[in-house]
Image 1 (tube, one colour):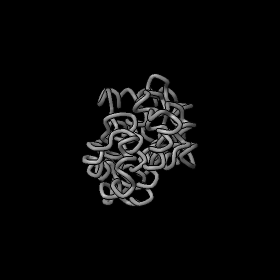
Image 2 (spheres, one colour; image 1 turned 90 degrees about the vertical axis):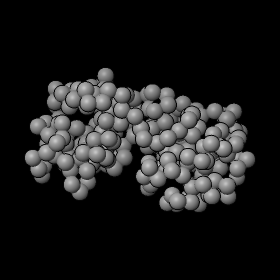
Image 3 (cartoon, helix red, strand yellow; image 1 turned 45 degrees about the vertical axis):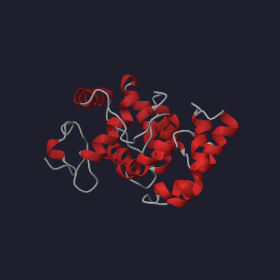
Length: 214
């Protein structure tokens, strides 16, 4: 685990991320807050590309909780069976849809506690929805962010909660909204798990990773 980078270095890093991509976007396809919740819940232990392929037709016919309930669990399974853990995920999608209809008038709530009360929605999923849909500076720490945060010193921590706190406590406030997307994309396409592309990395001179290859 690298040591925590100082404020000035972090500001330089995120200024570079911002200059490279001012408005980073999540890669899960969705058409509204509800389909975003479903897509993120389905993405656990699955790739965004795989989820997008499975939900392409699903969201055409079920883009609200009411329509998803009408489709039924078996109908959901037929669309998402290419995704890992699809049976359990289909069950959760139906359950969370029923709760949204019964308790929230079919609308997606904008509080972390309410979102986390939905089946299949953990803290990471809730943070993604809060960030992408409600534009709150919530930090959803996935494997990419955990790796980048610890390798580089941007947000070191022994577990995902510690990394989330490190981002919230140390990254300058004006970069908080997009911080998790910049870090995810950097981890996915540059700071890869097995072969990090240090030679072409835009923050290589500021990164604390001891094994970087220039």
